[in-house]
Length: 93
Image (cartoon, rainbow, N blue to C red; front, side):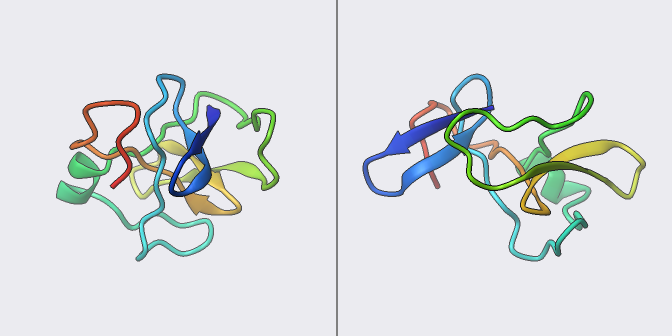
């Protein structure tokens, strides 16, 4: 994960390739409800171990368990996703 400074939004979290990370409004702290088609359009940021915050992140990264048992990264308890329609690392929808 990285932190990028966006001209409109300020500091935002990105994946290692620079693509914007998003929250899903219907998720609750520690719980992802984005499954099926939702997860196809908003792919979860999967965890491959403990989540560590990059420099510049003031919140806490953690790992939450999805309904299928897989693990994904959360920021301040809110699960993180990428967006399938982001085609350039500068995209923020």
